[in-house]
Image 1: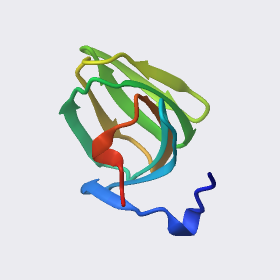
Image 2: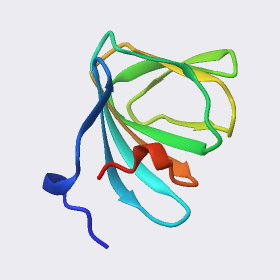
Image 3: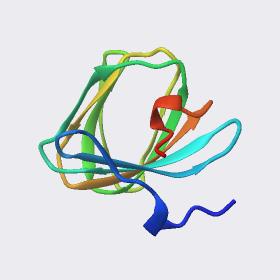
Image 4: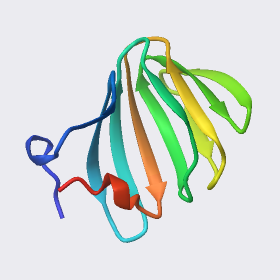
Length: 108
């Protein structure tokens, strides 16, 4: 199955954060995030494993109480049910993979 960029719905879950599902299979899902400098993803957790890659930009991420700054070319892993949050330091594009797919990200 092919997902065309022009057909993917863009969602703004919080101010300064845009999200679109790039592809979704039975066991994993790829999501693109565009994060505006100064935006914040509040602390949350979910039952999905999440791995990601910073394509452009920089943000501070807190995972399980441990903070790191990640930038272009860096990757990160968030295990299921671990509290995490993000403070965006520069305009950023990040690609995340969720397993299993997040039902709440099924943008129809």
